[in-house]
Length: 158
Length: 206
Image (tube, rainbow over all chains, first blue to last red):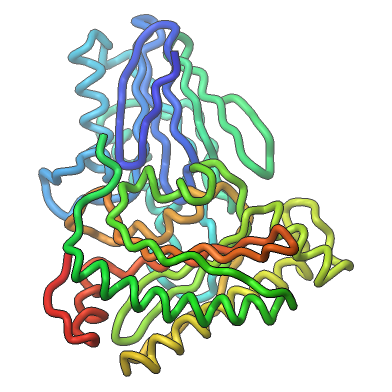
């Protein structure tokens, strides 16, 4: 069964289930999985840093979504030292010359995700980030495979 | 899950009037650009969940051609002129037969879409300025062809007390003869809808 993860949302699932999120532009899709326990989680994250320590929308920000996703997985049977991460998205959809901070949200999301994973000690084993195009991602909870499709570049798996 | 939040009717009415003026002028500019008569729907003014913003375009993965314009001045926000990719291709083949229609679009095709976005955004904003006396400046447009949600996300990134809902003023414009279609989306920056409302003598915000 495929479970949909919305914008500023995160979900976990197990075994034969899949988690999918649509149309990542500057947003990042962060996948965490424990390959032995067959449990995985996916977050669709919009911004690098939350304005407060406990924002109402935890999944909207990298610095709050990543720890939450990891702790949910551990509560549901994953083992922390077996958790691996994959990352997709973080594109810059519009190439504007002016230095508008919103334009660089994609790369900043990627940097923040790498940093959050480092501080949790979770290895980032694969990533498909940056560029100027949107991505829909599907995570196989059984295997940790992350399928990525785009309008311009077709489908690939990391 | 709820997709839309309730909005006070007097506030929705006032913003709809602005949307109508702006989109009316943008539609006239579109008509002139394509050389065909167009029809326009009544603008929708809604507080929509992020996930539902792309419904009008056929869903989050619908391929679209978009011009994005940042609005600055007395009110700030994000304005998009969006066509379904199929409609954009028809438009390009009639207006710029030399342009290729493979993705990514070539420079000729991009410049046509940029020009269209530029003209429509300028008409939209200048008609609002005429009506409200607010200073509203469009940035240079930036073009992208991609999934609808990946593009419209740009309008939803500002910090927002509504969390994962956005105020959207959306108008659909049709070219009946050519199966053409364009959408104008305006996302006022959170809080700046108050400036628009005050210019109409309506106090309050969302």
